Amino acid sequence: MKNYTIKYSFESENDLDGIYDYIAIDNPKRALEFVLEIKKLIEQLSSFPETGRLNKDNGLKYLTKEPYFVYYTVDHATKLVYILTVYHAARQTYQP
Image (cartoon, rainbow, N blue to C red):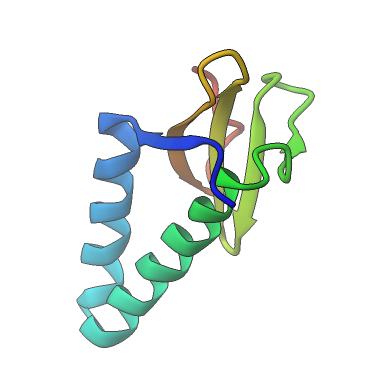
Protein backbone atom coordinates (compact mmCIF):
# COMPACT_ATOMS: atom_id res chain seq x y z
CA MET A 1 0.00 0.00 0.00
CA LYS A 2 1.41 3.34 -1.07
CA ASN A 3 0.91 6.00 1.56
CA TYR A 4 3.59 8.55 0.67
CA THR A 5 4.17 10.57 -2.48
CA ILE A 6 7.66 10.58 -3.97
CA LYS A 7 8.90 13.91 -5.30
CA TYR A 8 12.24 14.32 -7.06
CA SER A 9 14.25 17.52 -6.78
CA PHE A 10 15.60 19.06 -9.96
CA GLU A 11 19.08 18.06 -8.76
CA SER A 12 18.12 14.41 -8.25
CA GLU A 13 16.55 14.24 -11.73
CA ASN A 14 19.77 15.65 -13.19
CA ASP A 15 21.78 13.14 -11.14
CA LEU A 16 19.82 10.23 -12.61
CA ASP A 17 20.22 11.63 -16.12
CA GLY A 18 23.96 11.95 -15.52
CA ILE A 19 24.22 8.39 -14.22
CA TYR A 20 22.43 7.15 -17.32
CA ASP A 21 24.65 9.22 -19.63
CA TYR A 22 27.84 8.00 -17.97
CA ILE A 23 26.96 4.29 -18.08
CA ALA A 24 25.42 4.57 -21.56
CA ILE A 25 28.78 5.53 -23.04
CA ASP A 26 29.74 1.86 -22.71
CA ASN A 27 26.40 0.10 -22.34
CA PRO A 28 23.07 1.90 -23.05
CA LYS A 29 20.98 -1.14 -22.08
CA ARG A 30 22.69 -1.46 -18.68
CA ALA A 31 22.40 2.29 -18.16
CA LEU A 32 18.62 2.10 -18.46
CA GLU A 33 18.44 -1.00 -16.26
CA PHE A 34 20.57 0.61 -13.55
CA VAL A 35 18.57 3.84 -13.44
CA LEU A 36 15.35 1.81 -13.27
CA GLU A 37 16.82 -0.21 -10.36
CA ILE A 38 17.51 3.04 -8.50
CA LYS A 39 13.99 4.30 -9.20
CA LYS A 40 12.51 0.99 -8.01
CA LEU A 41 14.47 1.33 -4.77
CA ILE A 42 13.19 4.88 -4.38
CA GLU A 43 9.61 3.82 -5.12
CA GLN A 44 9.71 1.48 -2.11
CA LEU A 45 9.88 4.60 0.06
CA SER A 46 6.24 5.33 -0.81
CA SER A 47 5.29 2.40 1.41
CA PHE A 48 8.27 2.37 3.78
CA PRO A 49 9.63 5.93 4.09
CA GLU A 50 11.79 5.14 7.09
CA THR A 51 13.66 2.33 5.32
CA GLY A 52 16.87 4.29 4.84
CA ARG A 53 19.67 4.93 7.25
CA LEU A 54 20.49 8.22 8.95
CA ASN A 55 23.69 9.94 7.90
CA LYS A 56 25.08 11.47 11.08
CA ASP A 57 27.25 13.94 9.16
CA ASN A 58 24.35 15.72 7.46
CA GLY A 59 21.26 14.46 9.33
CA LEU A 60 19.62 13.09 6.18
CA LYS A 61 18.14 9.69 5.44
CA TYR A 62 19.68 7.69 2.61
CA LEU A 63 19.42 4.48 0.63
CA THR A 64 22.25 2.79 -1.20
CA LYS A 65 22.50 1.33 -4.66
CA GLU A 66 26.22 0.79 -4.98
CA PRO A 67 28.08 2.95 -5.72
CA TYR A 68 25.37 5.60 -5.16
CA PHE A 69 23.59 7.11 -2.19
CA VAL A 70 20.02 8.38 -2.55
CA TYR A 71 19.54 11.19 -0.02
CA TYR A 72 16.00 12.12 0.95
CA THR A 73 13.76 13.71 3.55
CA VAL A 74 10.38 12.59 4.85
CA ASP A 75 7.53 14.90 5.78
CA HIS A 76 5.06 12.78 7.72
CA ALA A 77 2.51 15.59 7.97
CA THR A 78 2.11 15.81 4.18
CA LYS A 79 3.15 12.19 3.50
CA LEU A 80 5.89 13.33 1.14
CA VAL A 81 9.26 11.73 0.48
CA TYR A 82 11.51 14.29 -1.18
CA ILE A 83 14.48 12.91 -3.11
CA LEU A 84 17.30 15.42 -2.75
CA THR A 85 20.15 13.86 -4.71
CA VAL A 86 21.63 10.64 -6.02
CA TYR A 87 25.23 10.94 -4.94
CA HIS A 88 28.26 8.88 -5.97
CA ALA A 89 30.06 7.25 -3.04
CA ALA A 90 33.45 8.52 -4.21
CA ARG A 91 32.38 12.10 -3.51
CA GLN A 92 32.51 13.60 -0.06
CA THR A 93 29.40 13.45 2.12
CA TYR A 94 26.47 15.36 0.66
CA GLN A 95 25.82 18.69 2.35
CA PRO A 96 22.54 20.39 1.40
